[in-house]
Length: 218
Image 1 (tube, rainbow, N blue to C red):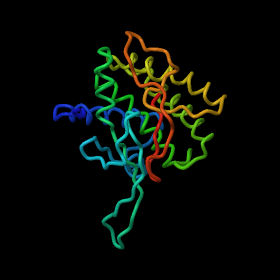
Image 2 (cartoon, helix red, strand yellow):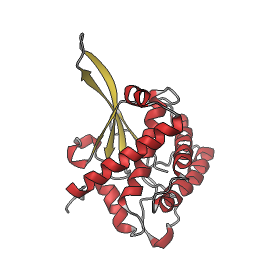
Image 3 (cartoon, rainbow, N blue to C red):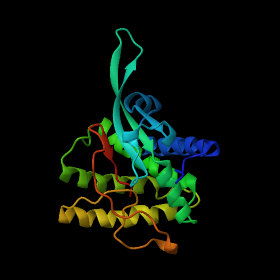
Image 4 (cartoon, rainbow, N blue to C red):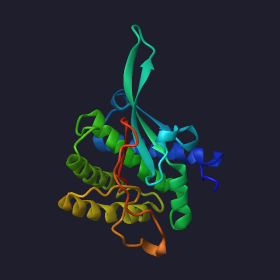
């Protein structure tokens, strides 16, 4: 069975969505351009550039942590976060729900990822936190993502937020009370979204490798 992946025409949309998500996140936290670029080191990869351990089937993206060599004297090594987009999961979700469109969907996904990165880089949260802390962190990031995007005038974005963000905020709060981890791409409480679309439901929280973490999408 052929694996879905982004095509050449999609990369322009990805770049535009990332630019919007960066601007919105930086403005929300009131970072200057230099603060944003110097303090928040990350890269974005799509399916074709991912290593085997970075490919999953139950989330829209995987957030990993890596190190890179910086050209300086003396040469030093610095940490960087990798946003690993899961093309096949994103595109399959779009095929299941014709009311979704790629640009607002990516703005939502990337904003959520960037909020995680901001919180890790500024020590608001720890990448390798305890399980109970991860549950609370996902609730926090979910709420912040919604606050950032709720007033943004992008066609179809409100549908994305209603479908994934609001539904999952309730689910996550219920999960936190029960101390049961239920994380994953568009994880929902078992109810079908509007229009009868069949989105991924519940997925187990796990570490594919020591330096990767499956992040929740609202």
